[in-house]
View 1 (cartoon, rainbow, N blue to C red):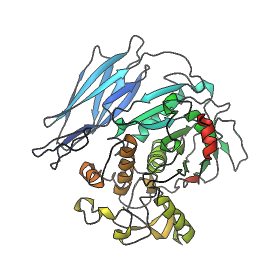
View 2 (cartoon, rainbow, N blue to C red):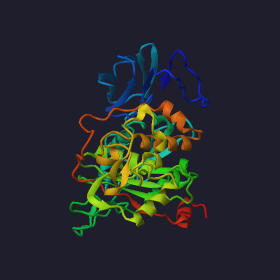
View 3 (cartoon, one colour):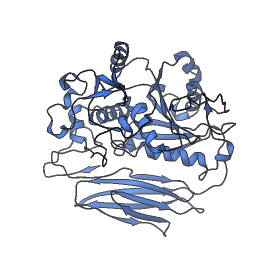
Length: 446
């Protein structure tokens, strides 16, 4: 991100600049890597200038670019010759950013089980690791480039990075895709006593439920097939699992860290069927629960008060840096988001009773957010939890005051300021602790 002004000052970390006068231009993805088949990509342009323009430098006419609102829609033709590259220059009010677009050569063929593709490379910091792998995909879906498996994994990746602040911090992340071939297509259904032979045993509860479970240890085995992750602590890895079933459901499997340091550690598997609202399910489950460890803000027991036993569990999770978006006090100065109090930029932050399914005895920090009805907006305390964990995993010291300087407060999406729009909330996270000895055996570190 480029930020400038008359009183611009250089921050202590050399990977970003800040100043007291807001004049900025940023692109969500300065390095776009496209597969060899005909493909599309959206890049978000963020600026406080009244207008922005772009130009492209390329050899030939293989790249087509369309400006749509605050986005550049990039389309590449199939490439059967040699790898190619183009540069898109974006400018606004004297500020300049560039986007490098590269495209591989299209190669027909099928992915083998456990074959790995790095679909995004971190260019800042240590590299935060996301793994995308699917369940219920048979060998017929594994065509390289154009197959359903790769298309769904890439769509899940784009969905994860589609909402701020992830749009701004995408280049802190590595994203690995690993092929996982199931014997049968789909998902098992508990209420129908239907069993489908899939790689990770994903099972939907069925009926009106949106709950799903899977085998986390088989997932971990696939994660550690990726050589670059062999020495990475499993509790620093986030897994997104698209499931090849056209149903509306979604659940995050969250696993307790070995020791909590208040930064949101914990292995997670976000199970997201590729049905209705797939993109929003990925954002809610993976970007919300899975990576930032925030909890639901739904209310579907409006007259019930949260039990003391659940409050005690949540207070334990808070010592790990989880649940930063819910608390048990109507007085904001007693909540985990107290530092936002009396800040005129954050007048939308307060205390709104009802969260974590209960209508009473528990409060959320803003009237609405992604963790309420999956709108593409994270509230301010959630953004702080997300950026804090990003910076910690990237290897940088980072303070709340720096977050306040960097945070570009998004607008609420239209007509979503109040009310719960979604009549079927997604299931609460499934909580468990992994057996550390079993994980060590999977990593071959015994």
